[in-house]
Length: 309
Image (cartoon, rainbow, N blue to C red; front, side, top):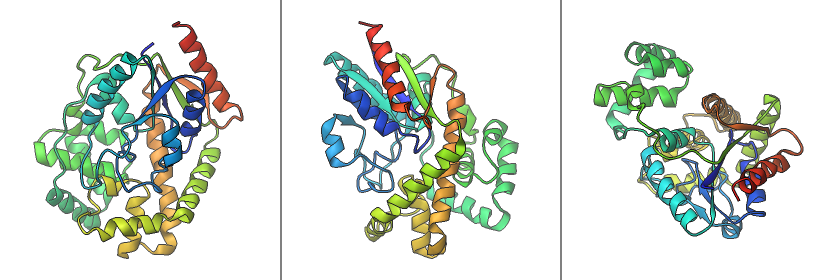
């Protein structure tokens, strides 16, 4: 037995299922979430509480300042070391999260991408204001048809990043995804919490964003802005929820529209995650909108573990 992976779109119930697994087996959780790595970003990332973090050992949470970067290649290196270390101590590693690029980097290998260039990104943003994201999507299709095909014409964050990579390196973003041998052995079981009814997931997303607003998301972003050394082009500040809240505080988005924009952006994130998941053909799908979803996840893990004993 090496490790278990539990994934799914945002708001699908991964945290609850992970703690249910931890209640039965001696596990350590490795976060697979590009937002949870940042300190001071607790509310908008739905980060486990200090009490929850104390219940079960967690890794790759609160390991970077929001000013710093953390790449898929960083995750692949760190997760591989952690899995081996946890196994060596006689425990089970449980990977939990929805940053699918991290999982792809771990299993398939991923070349290091160019670091973000603020000037180039600012130029791309200016172009988007003048011409619109669909036009920039068309530009991307001319230089990187593979990436453009999997992006929606209004997927501003990913179109921007793909164009940025091309302008920095002269190479399409898709060329950085290699067909090299598998970087790390696959998990004993890959479980994916996915809804049979998107309406259920959309309701969960709305409820969670409302809870974040009630818990103080706006004040959290105010505190981050008050630091003075952060800006909206940083990967940390481009996280869903933070980007929209920052824009509202800057006056670029009416504060009355924050809730709607935050929910829409989270739905779009979930849609992208579902697209990624369909490429993981070895996954075992558990319907997260069923009342016994957590019990099903635990049962799958029980069978996987007992079959190895």
